Length: 286
Image (cartoon, rainbow, N blue to C red):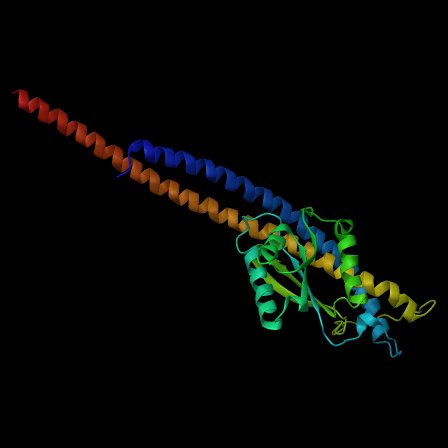
């Protein structure tokens, strides 16, 4: 049985850990509020640019653009959004498991795919397994601006335009609620299935013409989808970390209760033993 000192040291250590996890929970809760607002603020822009693109592509005019056309797939690009830090429950492992499974199912050679890693956890995961990481970015802010990933997004879209890859998929955790995040797999390019269902499209006049507008608008739209997924993923990350730290804090409370009970029992046993020894010594002197 552990000594009183050992149990007391464990109680003290657990209380200190609880203070840390509780503080991390509150910090994540604060960051989550800001991340939720960022995601909401981005939605109107995404919806409007999608409306304009949809209006052109479904406007009854024969408009052709490489980003709208499907071609034979020789190489696939996977954009994977993870965090730079751990202690976020299954946030990273769930999305990495999904991507790894897709790659194993769809490819027999590393020449058939490349990974664009956003986040240190994902980058290290793929490099540790000697999987091709074509582009990477780490250290993205907890409240990212588009400028933080503009270059990466532009270069990634350019990979498709240059036919270095023939399709691009996006993997990230979609924020549903503070306790629920869903691993999401989206086909980013080609833009062959722009969702217009249930939306009334506005009528636009284009100057100089639809083709030239698409040349500018489609890359921006694809880049905005990457940024939108990053913002969404950051909200999921903060929510997952908040939930994980709350669970850790609750577990620490439970452990402290169990250790305190053990401490009191051991202390009572020690006192009883001392009393018995005193009584036994007194009786021996009679």
